[in-house]
Amino acid sequence: MVLWPLLSWGQDFDTATEDALKVRRCWERTALSMLGTSSFRIPTDLPSGAPYYGPVPPAQFKPEWVAHFFGDEKYFDVFPQRFAAFVNAKWQRDQSTSKERNAPYLIARYVVGKGLPWRQTFVGRFDLDPVEGRFTVIPSDTGLGYFRTKKWLEVNAGNEAQGYKLSTAYRILNNTLGIKLTAAANNTSVPDSSATGRAAPGCTGCHFTGPYPLDTVARVLTRRQGSGAMMTFTPPTDGPQQLWGHTVSTDEELVNLLISSEQFTFNTCRLVFEFMYGRSESTCDAPVFDACVAGFEAEGTIQGAVMGMVRHPDYCR
Image (tube, rainbow, N blue to C red; front, side):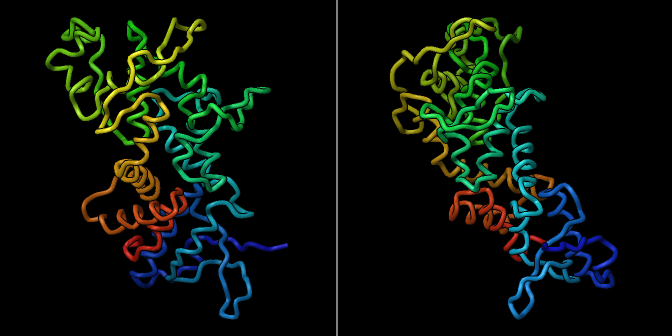
């Protein structure tokens, strides 16, 4: 049996030097973000190459040790749970304790836990199995990440009179690219919320003519019919739409186009950076942020993005 000695701050670090304090803070921040604790056990290697599990040496930060936080025998599933909970809170309009309403969390946790490409969160052939209320992730030939899971579709269907899923269109843009728009629906200053009203000056930018036109995006999605328990979805009927220089006909084509963009990579690293540092990036963080982008582009996984960051010499500064 392998014994994992516990690392506790104030015992194993030489706090006499600024460098030691810097490393201590770096380990503490990393462990708190990834594991939810500042006390952890980590494997090191003796010069002979023989494995040894012991406390982190004073004033030393080895990026390869961080890889053990992804899910070895000690920390199995902790990092996937924490990262999935973080992005779920970012992506969901309303927070809920219902597993069925948290498809983004369940599928993101599955993807990260299996070390799959992050894009699979959005286009993977998955669904949720409701047996006994567990809602476990299962294969599905008709899946599209969490975007086709039943409760997610219902919650984000919106209430547009003709059944165009403007809310769904926004969630897809927001979750993949980080786009943020302020809705003016039902605002007394907007007397007509129909497609005609949305095409009027003051509204058309977000709905039709801007870089991320919600109505145009919604026209390649299924249409909502009915509401509540009677809600169903029918195939789109408006034909192919022109989006970002491409002809798009279905939700699958839409999402694949979005996650093939540079902005998807950029937004992914914005999420990873905020998760690891507890704040948004700034201009002075460009070298570490660029390292995240390089790691993500090379491996396509959240693990690759994290390791790109922690390997950069500025990560602990």
